Amino acid sequence: MSENYVVLLGTKGGPAIRPGSSMPTSNLFVLDGQEIVVDCGLGVSKGLVDQNVRLPDLSLIFITHLHSDHYLELGPLLHTAWTAGLKTPVDVYGPAGLDAYWEGFLTSMKADIDLRIDDEGRPDLRNLVRFHIIGEGTVFDRDGLEVSAIRTEHPPLIDCFALSFRTPTHHVVFSGDTAPIPAMEDFARGADLLIHEAMLKDGIPKILERVGNGSDKLKAHLHRSHTCADDAARIATNAGVKALALSHLVPSDDPTISEPDWHAAIAGIWDGRFFVGRDGLRIDL
Ligand SMILES: [Zn+2]
Ligand SMILES: [Zn+2]
Image 1 (spheres, helix red, strand yellow):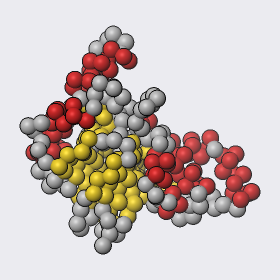
Image 2 (image 1 turned 30 degrees about the horizontal axis):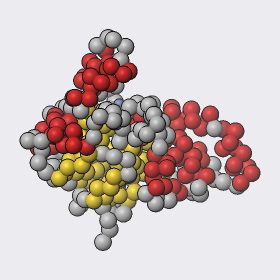
Image 3 (image 1 turned 60 degrees about the vertical axis):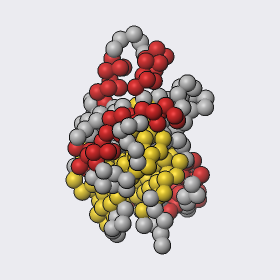
Image 4 (image 1 turned 90 degrees about the horizontal axis):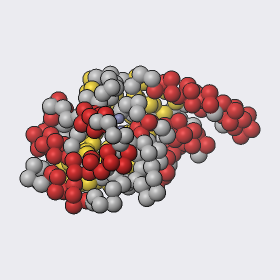
């Protein structure tokens, strides 16, 4: 029987890392033996290898939106898989503009890529990666895996997607970056696991103190584009999911905030199976 699980490889919200920091967003889903990478923030390559994934076996990658903390390492991951022996096609699904990123990456690495083809006899990386631009609805349906997408509320971006991964036996939903939206409840209805982004309300004043510039802009951005933990818990409860994991955590590097604070934030709202994201956390389905 195949194993089904999710590993949260990178769990911090936002692109900046600091000493002792967790890493930006990336995930490994293993569903009915199919390895799927969801988002490719900084650290994804090492995160996958640490989970004993053979990079040349990569075949399926999804990117939720074009904020760097979700795709900065997509090019380096594909290139590293290639230098590790990738010979088979990789399908990458993501918003419009991701194809331009890839073209730019290939251009930036042209000297190295041409050299390795010539000097090491590798197949042309440019022919191994296929890009698919996604919108709302079913974006993938193959070998018993159906992936569908809805737009989230993550201004100023329009193309930011939540993704649902469904096999005959399992259903996992990934919120992407989003303010709380009622549509997420239907989208995640009855799922085995909802991975939802989350902010801790009590931690926000400290963030503003540390990195804010005195204006209300950062605070307004956080509340317009992201979800507080209690709202994520409410969505999970209303959707009737079987488990909730919080990830894309904001704040992620405040030493005064730890796991019990996140538990306290959802207490009385969600009382099911619950996970606070940390890098490398494996969740069995
Ligand atoms: Zn993000
Ligand atoms: Zn974002």
